[in-house]
Amino acid sequence: MRSHYCGQVNEDHLGQEIELCGWVHRRRDHGGVIFIDLRDREGLVQVVVDPDTVEAFATAERVRSEYVLKIRGLVRDRPEGTINPDMATGKIEVLGRSVEILNAAETPPFPLDDEREVGEEIRLKYRYIDLRRPQMLQRMRMRSQIASTMRRFLDDNGFMEIETPILTKSTPEGARDYLVPSRTHPGEFFALPQSPQLFKQLLMVSGMDRYYQIVRCFRDEDLRADRQPEFTQLDIETSFMDEEQIIAMMEKMIRELFARVLEVPLHDPFPRMSYDEAIERFGIDRPDLRIPLELVDVGDVMANVEFKVFSGPAKDASGRVAALRLPGGCELSRKEIDDYTKYVSIYGAKGLAYIKINDLAAGREGLQSPILKFLPDEAVNAIIERTGAQTGDLIFFGADRAAVVNEALGALRVKLGHDRGLVERGWRPVWVVDFPMFERDEKSGRWSSIHHPFTRPKVDNAAQLAADPANAKSQAYDLVLNGTEVGGGSIRIHSAEMQAEVLKLLGISDEEAEAKFGFLLDALKYGCPPHGGLAFGL
Image 1 (cartoon, one colour):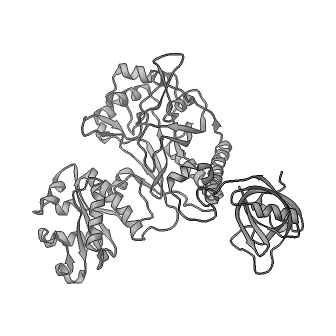
Image 2 (cartoon, rainbow, N blue to C red):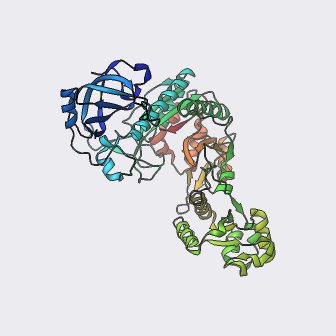
Image 3 (spheres, helix red, strand yellow):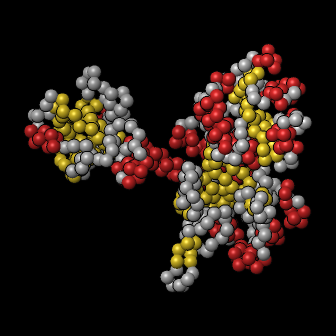
């Protein structure tokens, strides 16, 4: 039906008669000459229909926004002064000789020819129209390019694309399963996979060596910006590669991806940061390194002050007192500070103390804060020196259980960065490594896995893990990009003894372990190779 895509017509086609198909993006009637911006997946092209072509002109008078047309016409230069440098086809136009309406359209529920914001609810209701918008088409095209680039890289590096089952048995992986009732076995249910984790490990036992697939996963979780009930990930697993080798290969893939799709070079190698360092400096294990603000521990400074709001958490082994310096923060009004205080309360903080450095040279007289009367000079001076505060800065404080301080000040750091225009341009990837193996649930007192129970600990044997699970580190690694975890993985347990010990520490009885993971425990006994992998969200 067509000879060319609209967005691909250019000066190479001057003088050629072509056929186009697409949607009417915009129609304008200028003194008897009708201009139609015709749109398809590849972009826009301007079509001109004048009264000399009587039949085509009559048809063009009837068309409206989002009509589907087929147009035959001659490619010519645009007249001087009408070139549009913002369009890929802005130097040419098509003189329409034939206009055929393939389908009419009602007035769309929202315009597609401008950049105005449209409510999410109406966009989702008319998703098929929303996806026609150029910016949405571009996102879908980029997603396709990302997938094909990753596939090409993995194919070139000896990985095999293998599909794993969708209807399977339920296994605990950190979220609730979606269940599908079985017709042939009444009262029994299949589970939709939260990830192909166990299947890809079994593939390594099978000797597949290097596996990947672009796979749909399902988790029955509450909706959040970074959590969806169904999502797609690039799933990867490989045998006989250690943590360093896997990270190096995945870095190479991501650098190639950015170079091909975005034409952006990334650092080589990516920086690395331990989990403990990320929490200490940024309050979160997925730090946005574009924001030049950091948390600073001041617990030792506050341990002996009379103000129990600070001294209490400072002396508590599970507490933390931290400071966050905001350059130029003296400009903040009391209302703005109150708003930030309300914001951190979302994360459990009971308040947000602060000190304004109005004039550092004036000493204590140059400072402004409701808490100054509780702090001796040596404490104030130590805080200013440690945070590097200067005249015009403001220092926020968090004092509570470490988890509350980390989450509250970590979130405040990101909000201040965006509110105050401190976010640097560009891409800042970082590997976060050396995660704790376990964390203890405060209510039940039981251990739970930071990643999943198949992650290999950094110990030599099961006895060492059992002796000190609280301080055990895991061979897990997350790739964080501009504050978002884009991929995560680990070296897996390949010893049946170690796997059984991990399940035991998690409070899973031998009977339950056999019922839920017996197939894996058996497989580990039959020559399972060292293996590991990761998954990237798409």
